Structure formats: structure tokens, C-alpha cells
Image (cartoon, rainbow, N blue to C red; front, side):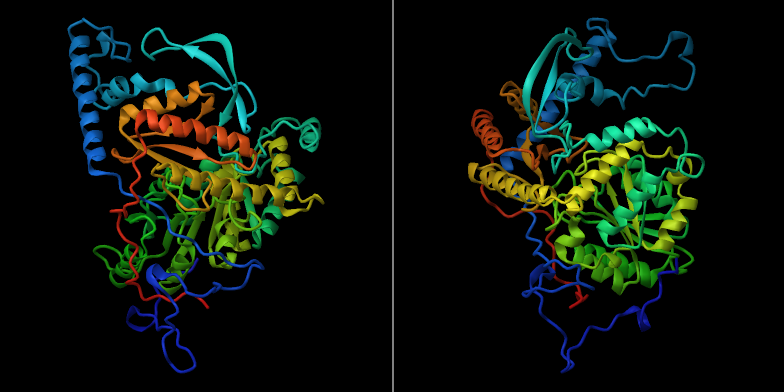
Length: 552
């Protein structure tokens, strides 16, 4: 790849001028156009307005009570540590052996404080074992604990038909319909369950190449490369693209796989505020004008890392604006569409289609098959030169085991269904049903008075609970109503923004959603978590103080 420090004279880019040499000012606040525009070559679908992300501010007393709640459980944690130290309470946590007390400690006592004193008290809300297909409903194995969540035992009973509001089964392809899965069963019979080798040795099958051709066609790019693990698709490929002397500009809310890949690359990492174009442009301008620290040499590459849908916030990337900035400053763009591919866009082709931008404007398209496709693995797509380079230099491609044949076939059959290549409209209907379900569920939650985050088109819907005690009570109460939810708290979220995260699926029927909404309404009143007052957010505003131009 070419070096990316070359800009116009004095590091500035001239504005696009119309025929009368007047700057095109068809933009409104936050960079939105007051007319429909397209960025680059049309993808054949009408671009959609992004819509504002919702980040409503909670009342002040909620934040205060949240801090007080964490303070109380922390004090009790120290008190219980004292009881364990004097032998009044049994210590279940791993400890150093007496004969190794002079060694470098294997277990850091302070680092384990949160786990043994806070997490263990509420561990029953996570890692629940299911015993069925994780479709719109699933069966849950009942378990109990006799030592306050340190260990569990199964009772042998099963909780039947729990409504699944936590799996990433956006299009409902996590299913056990024998007719739909016949081709998958055939591939399992023909090739077996595993390849037992890498693609570069004896693990390259014809269906792997068929899948890569299909992915490239689906995304509208030259070529693609698939991997057996979605997390490794990011963490093992970013180090192959950038290294020492390169600069990574990463959104502050990027997924752990992107963060790990950036750290493994040895490149310099700078973080910009979430979806804030002013913050991103400031870093780009400084990078181009100042270059590398001390030497001030130009950066070899500048790579922008963003996600299509942010999995904990439910917000959509500001893709047209980011593309305009990366063109202006001659940077590269890495777009992670793990949650957006299949889930947004008129035909399920992700945020690139949703905004009507040219896929060629995104240098590295990444996505996973673990969500909308009901399978496993991930892909990197883009120019043929990029893919050929990664086939040789990506650790995941060189050393990782090839994708399982039945998993490969599952992805192929799901993707063909979405594209309509199977001769049916099933895929299109699922995409449209997901849109309807998402907008219905979001609007009802807002009417009830809950604070929810994210974009109106995002199937990831975080519902803010804030207080640690209410998070635990919420999860347990919903399970009593036969509804499975995912709750998330610190350190996975900011300490004052614990939440329940709902993932809506096209497989959810309207009666299912109504049952969940009724349970949420009752639980919200019981726990008093309807905090919405429709106040504006205190998060950094997305200013329009940038001087880039969208393609028109």
C-alpha cells in the first residue's frame, strides 16, 4: 500500500466548487444533506438518512445512587475479605500454595477483588446453559447453587420455551428446519465435520472458494477471504495490514477484537470520540501536519477503525462523513460490519448499502457469519490485491484451521437466501420483517418511558438500568416471566451505564414481542427503571465544524 501522508499543498484540500465557483453548502448541522446524495458510484439502492443516535441523559439522582450502590458493595467486599482473612468466612477463590509463598505471585489479590466480591454475588445472571436451538425461543437447563454462586449443580429440570432476546440471530437463520438444512446435512455427509488442516495445506475445499466468490458478489467487491473465527478475523488481520511507523485512529467504543488487533500490530494508536467527526478530523489533521513523534516523518499508513453497528450502544457509524474525511486526508478505512451485515440495508448488505455509498470507498470490509447468517467465522473483502496479500501474510489465513464444511454450507445457503439466488423471496421477507420488528420494539419501549440507546434502524437495543442492584433484579425477574435477556455492567460498560441489551430477530413474532413488552412494562414499574424524561444527552455533540465535502 502506498504511503498516506500526501495531501495537497500545505496539507489542505480545496473545497468542491460548483459552476459559479461557490462552495457547495447543501449540508445542515452534523454534516447531513438536505437533499438525497450519493457517495461515489451508486449501488443500485436509494441511500437512506442515517437518523440521529439516541443517548438520553438520566436524572442526576440516578447517577448519584449508582455510585453509592457501587460504594456500598465495595465496602462490604473489604469487610468480607477481612472475615476470610481471620477465618470467619470460607475462602473459595484460588490461592497460592504455602510452599510457593516466596515465588512471584500467580494470583493478584487486588485484581481479583471485583470478581470474588461483586461478580460472584450475581454470577447466576450469566453463562446460563441452554439445551436447544438458540432461535426465537429456547430451552434452559435449571441450575441452583448452595454456596452463593461459587459452584452450580443442575437439577435435571428444563425451563421450556424461554423467549430469546439476547442472541444475535437477526435474520432467524439459527434454526432446525430440516428442509432448510438439507444441503448442510449433505455437506456434512460428504466432507465430514472438520477439515483438520489450514487452507494453504490440505484444507482448501471447493465450497470454501465458492463461499468467497459469493461473499465478493454479495458485497459488490473484487474478492474476499474467509476465516473460521470472527474474533480472529480482526485480531489477526489488522497486524498484517499495519505495523511500526503506521497510525491507527480507533473509535473509543470499538469491539475488543479491533482493540486487540490494533495493539498486536505495534502501530501507534490514537482514539477519537465515538462517532464524532470533529474529533476524528482533528486527529487526522495533526497526523498529517506533524507526522510521527520526534522524527516528524510522514506516517507510512493511517488506518481508521470503525464498526457498522456498535454492539453495546446500538449506534450506526457515520459512514459518508468518515469516507469524506479519509479521502481528504488520504487515509485507509477498515469497516467492521459484524453486527450490520445482513441486518441493515434494503437487501441486507450492511451500512454500505444503507447509506448508498460505493463499497470501493471502503478499503477493508470486514464482517462475521456468527450473527445474521446463523453460523461461525468471518471475512475480509475488498480489492483483489488486498485479499491476495492477506492470503500470504495473515496469521489467521496461514495458521488457522479451515472453516468447517457444514458451517461453510450454512453460510452459503443463508447468503443465497438473502440474495434471492435460491429462487425465493424468503431472504427479502426476513430483512423486511427485521426492520418492522426493530422499529416496533423501539417505539414501544420509548412510549413506556425507558431510556434506550442507539439508532432507529439498529437491531441492537440497549435499555439503561444504571443501578447495579436493579440490573440483577431485572435479569432474574425477566427469567421468572420466561424471557431470557442479556444484562451488562461495569467494566464492560461505563460504571454509571449498566444496561440490558436486547437483540431483535426477524424470527420474533408480534405476539412474542408483545409478551416481552408487557413483561418489561410490569418489571419497569416494579423496579422503577423508567427513567426517561426526554432530556438531551451530555455526550459530546457531533459538531459541524469540519470543512470536508461529501461526494455529490
